[in-house]
Image (tube, rainbow, N blue to C red; front, side, top):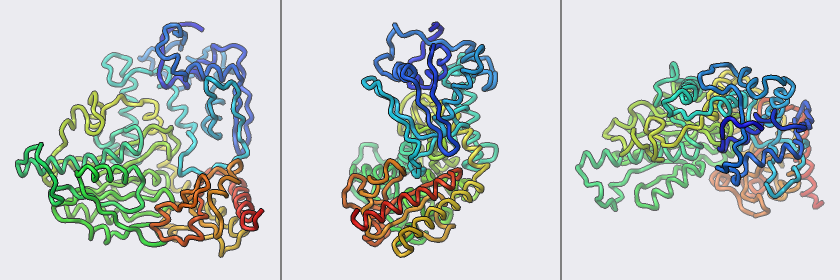
Length: 548
């Protein structure tokens, strides 16, 4: 291995792939199938992966043995040129690398063995993935977009020297893509309309923090209150409204603030059996001059019910209340353009829900929403940061070096999912129907109960939360776990007898709630796999009912 520069970061995994050309006698065994792709790297390749991902190698001066040729940051060559830097003289090995990356993107997750384990995990090519609401495979579009920024353009986007130029421009371009294609902003909107974060949880926490802190700062300025003054009176605390089926990224943040006597919270119940809130119930909970934020998810992650966020946002705006929505599950299935709901002040989108790696999300912030109606920007906003304090990245709103490869991937996928949203939603609905019909054919219609709205316009097309009468969800999951990958709507993943908070909130009958599964699909799943999964689940449920 030749030495040109040292690259000891978390991206070593992808760098290992890019450096395959330097590893002799290291062939990849591939088993590419039409329905499912799997790969079994050779033991020597697994060893190289462990080298690049092992923390014991970080900062070790004896391991300065990584080279990528022709990586000067002023080289603005396209992706094909970047690939040639991995191996300019061996097109076959370059294609092999790309084939491996495609396998990673399209197939089931491959477990990387730990340094203590030399035995690669066997591929599980026969397991059908029905958990797309939990996470999605990394799209080949995202993979290819990222590669140059793991290798050639590795510079820090905050650097003023040439190595920072291309990464900085890439982040700027991706921000425009996300603003334009996901949030519907003309020409991508203003740069500080889109703030990149490390995950959806951070974006949701940031939205809550900005609303609460800008309100408190405004109250203190208006009433000339000392910053150290006590705030024990509930009438002096900001009030937040949410639903009783929100993601923990919302509820746990609110509970923490409430426990610290910073805010009070009202949880608006959803409609029984349906799972969405009534706009009138949310508006009725607003307390004049106290409510600073309403945060309601666009679509529920467990049952797929869609909330009337446009109606709620409109009423909030009329009452000078900020409105935020967690749209993590909506991207690629519903329109997330704020042009359709201009009263929305903040919106969260999450990369790994639409083909981008885990570890990147974005928060839309409407211009001036934090500085009107007596609100004042929180301390350090625009300098060190708001929730995460540091070097003032993301326009001083979110400290921390930008994750350039993932941001680039998010931008590319934003354009892709926006372009194909309607077709994808149609394909998802067809597969959802086939899955439900297959279960009913085996178990009988009376024993299979979909949770949430039956009206397709009021639910996501890709989520089927379905209760199986008399079945124990945890036991069912255990019996099919090597054949179908899905999750339970009840909190019985390990054989417990609990029912999820969401199903309790919907008042789902116990005989169905305990046997609820959340099955979530993609638009490009093979229809035969969908039908096969229905048979596997249905037969396993039938065996449980007859005591086999």
